[in-house]
Amino acid sequence: MLNCPACNKPTISKGQKFFTGPLGHFCCPDCGAEVSVSWYSSLSMVVFLAILAGVSQHASTTMRIVTYVLGVAAYMTIHMLVVPLVAKKP
Ligand SMILES: [Zn+2]
Image (cartoon, rainbow, N blue to C red; front, side):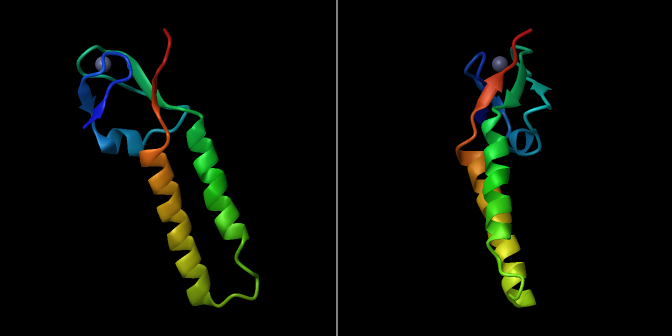
């Protein structure tokens, strides 16, 4: 469980964070604060797109699939480990 940025209690599941973007939010079950992820999550998408753009147009299908999987893994890792949760102001 992750700590709520408003009440600092471990009430946020990793799944809630994973499926939330900077425009979405969910409510903390303890304090009711609206919780979202920082806009930094958009930067993790930039990393993903940069990895995809780095693949040559002449790369093999296998290389493209491997690169796509690595890009998704990098995006998920950055989103879950680096992007902070934020409490939205009312
Ligand atoms: Zn809370």
